[in-house]
Image (cartoon, rainbow, N blue to C red):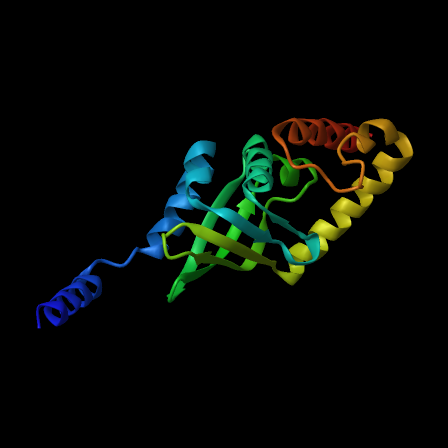
Length: 189
């Protein structure tokens, strides 16, 4: 009987314990990103997170997530979340993003129809899946295509430094600074 009472008490405590407020965690992510707090952002992520950007690719693991966060922060990325909805351990929001890369390329902002954050049992972010709006995909595709064409033909050595030996773009603070310099030169010509 004592064993049954212990199980019942444990079940009651689990049922009554407060569940993490996942939407609040997403708002914290937004605030930390907009404030440029890299270490605060890193703490929000699980040990092996995944970020999926649809046709732009995906990254896995804390070192890669740190790199893309450093890159975004160096570009002064600003996020505005809206229409957030929680379903279990997932939160989906629309997002408007602006940053120095976009502004330098002549784009005011881009919109994500959905950013879906999935949380682990420990309340940390396990994955983020971002879906660009069709209009933003067109804007980004045109800007990236024109910039790529210009960079390959006029600054191949500098442009090549942005990629790994395997040809993958390297996300880092240093690369963000290099990209902005190249973008400025492209716009000046």
